[in-house]
Image 1 (tube, helix red, strand yellow):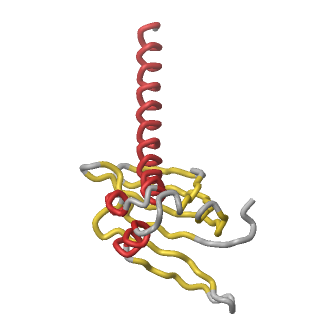
Image 2: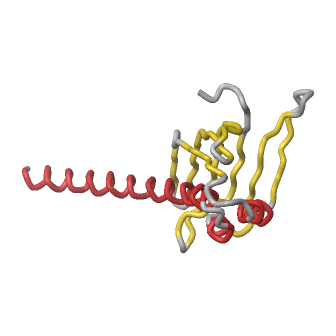
Image 3: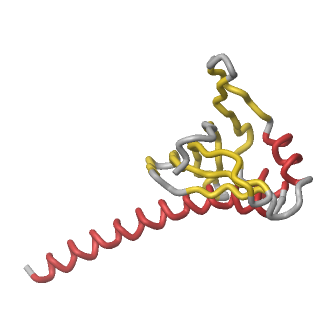
Length: 150
């Protein structure tokens, strides 16, 4: 009986550690994007994405009409690479991370600062794919607002 209990506990802890490690690796993949932005490192930024990755923002115009704006990752990376280091500081928290095999999602509320001044807040929704070299971002869509950011 004692041997069975030890085996069950060992199995449980093995799965718990593996799940935490996988979650941490997804968080690291997402965090690498924001480290690249903070360091104005366009090459590191591009390396965070899977081939064919998509970057989108939900916007609302002055009349309240909602649309989705797409941006090429290469254009975004080029823009970030031209900024001084530390200019763009997107501070995120991990609200939800879910994983199923080689697919992961991350929901990250954020506050964006430009040259230490608050610009806007919102939420990033990430879709990630585990590839041979690790987790890569396949898709990001975000919201942006200037109020309700507490």
